Length: 470
Image (cartoon, rainbow, N blue to C red; front, side):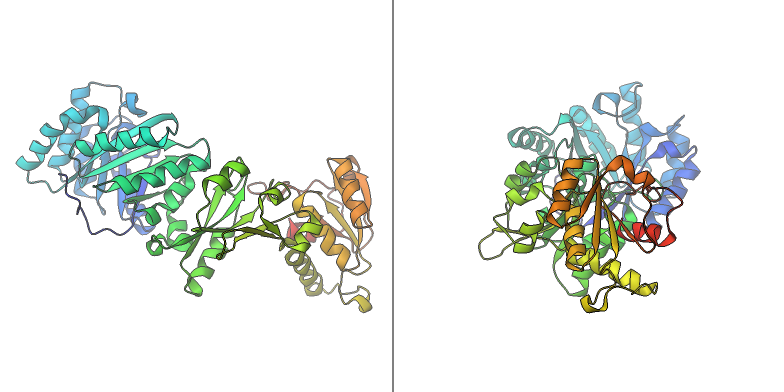
């Protein structure tokens, strides 16, 4: 116990096996094989989650047939787990796991008085297993000083590894987790659960985390990346202290396809960067908490494309005229945040390409765009809607704009010399043949990707481009 060289350190991916989905030890073994196939290096097994758990029978099957190293946890209810029985029996199950060659044993800080007995049991059975002393913090993430005290208490137990878990009420709390790695003399597993805590997993290798947790396919867990995304999108084995961080600032953020688009691009050009989803509740707190040059750039999504302008040090003229920013770069030479709008050209070009692909290039030839002279029906006058409106106007389209906020629709229509109509009229709107319908609202976002707030009798092309731009 207490060695700082537990294993040669490289990021290790631990699959969280939520055992309540399995009804037998044999099925748990199958789950471990699935975890291995999906790229896990280790599996964490919660004994307290197993229905009708029989320690001798179940642990023998599990540990004698394990395809991967196993971390055994038997979490009591007083530490947020499910075990409510006799404490001695709970600890006896951990001792049995030692006898059966479990690779890691998790012991709560509050139960650390049992460590001498457990260590002696390891020696008597020539076990090479490692002790993890853990602490699960109730409520929101405490101040840095409190977290540091917990780290010091866990280190003082002589554990091989320590583990600290919090619940993130805001993404800015994660910075306190990252700062703890500087103070540890033993390997540290530290993260926050919940959707706002996702970056505590994905950026853990950058700050020196010992494990990264992932979820199995078909069993998503809030705040954990899937094992597949760790392997295919994030490739966390390449993340280190020098890795530059990019991400999508949005609320919600789970729908984003950014990680599977940007991270492979970084690798293709040999750039040491990672792109992650960032569930942000408060822009001011976020930017003041993460001013480091290592946080090098951001995409901006719903609902922040307009609000974020006031947090940029400089704004590109196009973005300023549109009144919306969807891309921010932290300028290397001075650290200033510079805002851009790439939605405008990207979205309009995508629509033009779709029209050409479907043989609809009948716009006015003098303007060189299939949108020229065409009716462009825009639903949503927020940040994304503004970019589409200005882009369509630049191509010579005629605009009709709908928004739940009619005043906002009128304001945008005035800016692009278009027409605003009340949102309630959308369901009865009859477009002319060949009209474009562009969706700039949350309707149709994941997981309800087949939803559209218009009549089903609309022209097929009208509906086609709703899906293209939605």
